[in-house]
Length: 622
Image (cartoon, rainbow, N blue to C red; front, side, top):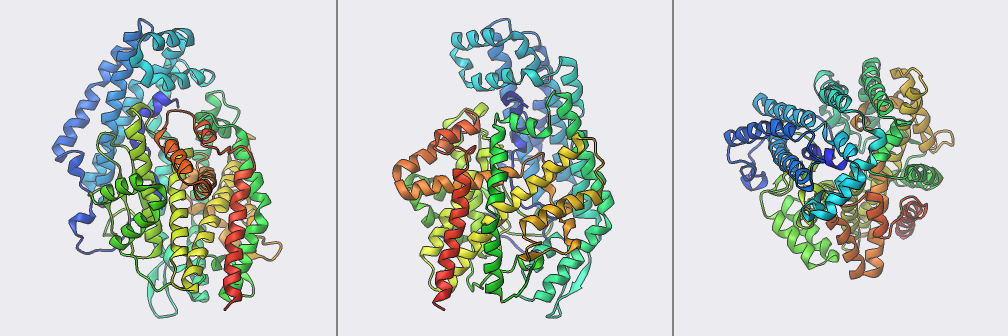
């Protein structure tokens, strides 16, 4: 989809951290720790009026069909109408989504979210003619119009991107036909979400302390970090044993998604789904290939971490269920006010203007902070309300993970604020390739701050171990996911069958290689090779590798800040201020990071080794 087309989907650009079922915690919540949606619309009635008004503009948009080449003014008026409509549609969708996530069990809010989805689908239908017509008008005429009318400058990058998409743009009729199926193309993801969050009857286990727990996605995430190794194994066996019962069904659902995306890529004249996904942001394939090559070359560093983990946990042979317990315990609580204070103190390295902006924003009702019954789990930042401000969903549990998540999501939020202050709506929504850079860099800043201010070696080890686990989970694990996802698309493109069992075989080969199974580093039980069924990101089309590239870029930019100070801070902020005004690869190169070269990836592995050096030095003193 071109930059012009992306505007219509702006409200769907959420930054997620967690996709599990809704929380079950209940209890009174202070209003100041919930977001204020009246800043979007004062009432549901006002929201409904805005939604109807958006849909009323669709005929007017259609009326501009065939006029783009008449004059510069005709082109401007059509693009302005589409932009203004998309802008309000994004606000409508943001309200509906946030309201629904407060309690996923409320039918009225879920229905409003569905209505906003329909609105966006209809907007896509109403604008399906736009790109083919831009191509018919042609580059020469478009360029002359931009020179003639300065008002078109805000649309120049989107028009350039539309023209770049000429080889993959279909006829008006074909584009319009495909737009009718936009909701249907998302059915596999919807089906998977319903199965994993609602339909599977999760088992209950009795832990070694006598407590009973339901091993659903939340229970699994909680219990797998238990200090008791037998409990960990029991939880793994119960969770993956239940998933195994649904392997054929989940395999069929994921295969449906893979086959759909493969067909769509072919219909648009792409050689592969990978080419299509990289083309969207004009990314060179060398980025993906270099990431995979360098991460595989760095597997000895990952294996070193596993061996250090085994030593610190007192385990002779690491197994897959030994990855998640903390290396040392930390008897500290980080309530939300403490977390806000620490985050602001840590961000001082980014300058007073950053801290002042973040402090002021944190003191507003932009966040929904605590878990409560029916609330969506995980965390995200929603940037869709361009004329208001970003919103953040958290499920804060007063622990270090909650503190780190707060810093992560506020990295997204400050990015959004910088972008909207410096960009018009049409170039304010930055690409996914850029999106995770400020979030991961803020996590790094926080980690360094916590290590510097730790009160004991044990506390320092905790933060260093958390940093290692973050790199494992993002740099290595997400790249492993990317390799698996690519293997599925390549199999489909070769015409091979993809059953649930075949997916397990493909995933198992990667899981064992990454964890050094054959070398005896981490033993992977066959049951656990069904883990692919638990990952919702596979329904988001070659998305996961960008977590690894973003962490890599964030590491490089933060290293420059540490070494150079203010010039590097200014460079970093300029990247955030650029929003989506250029292709992400170019924006990062301008910021001094070339993601198509090995250097940035090798620096991540080197940092991980340096952390382990520091940990081993501390351990040697004990």
